Length: 318
Image 1 (cartoon, rainbow, N blue to C red):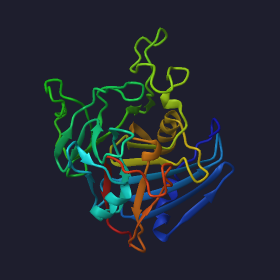
Image 2 (image 1 turned 90 degrees about the vertical axis):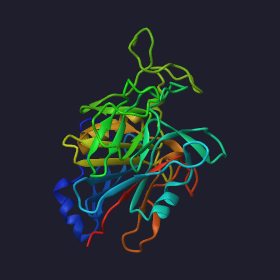
Image 3 (image 1 turned 45 degrees about the horizontal axis):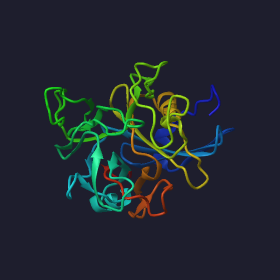
Image 4 (image 1 turned 90 degrees about the horizontal axis):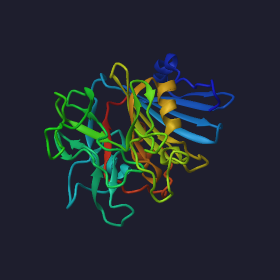
């Protein structure tokens, strides 16, 4: 988007979504807003600058009645058994689902997978905070977003006294927790990791990787499909963002995602989730009750089998 242009999510019109679809068309793109479930607002944006891009945003009121969450539970010989986000939505009879953690091995035809970063499902922590084997993209000890049984959302960090790295230092009840490659929004500021070099001795990442990433060509500045999750200042609104790199959409950089979360959706803390072909958002059609893709996968029309997804359960909007 051009400097100074900020597409707001039309908060004053959200109540009108109860009456159905709202569409707006502006100089730089179009916005569609619906409220398919109680406490859930779905926004689809198409932009033309700085490149064609389709963006899907889900705003979830964590105080809404009937709301709950579930991360893919542990299974198989490693952490989880891979399936598409749409398959997980159908399996759980959920209303929405988004892909979660990075995973290894990748690429692989193997369905058993290890998730990268702290993970918990149904109150059970099953994967530790990460000390990554590659660090051109994955940051050590990335926090996780924990949603407790009462839908209180908190950021959790590793307990330094726990050698297994599966306990958190915060006094919270563990419910369902998801993590990513890095915290890209921190206290309302963009916090994209930098690589350690002479100019950035404090850098968090090591240059290198398959494309010789460095601070002039960062992995975080590549244009790709993206998934991210964050919280607004009061911690009462969960924001999920999925960007397509298919169907005419060219994708975004992680820095652009962070800017969008901060400027347009009031996110003060947010994580970059697995992206590329893993970026996936699925929803139960409120009218037909069939499970459908919301975004267009850059992997294949059926979507990529990912290590885990976060399911959202919500009441229908009357």
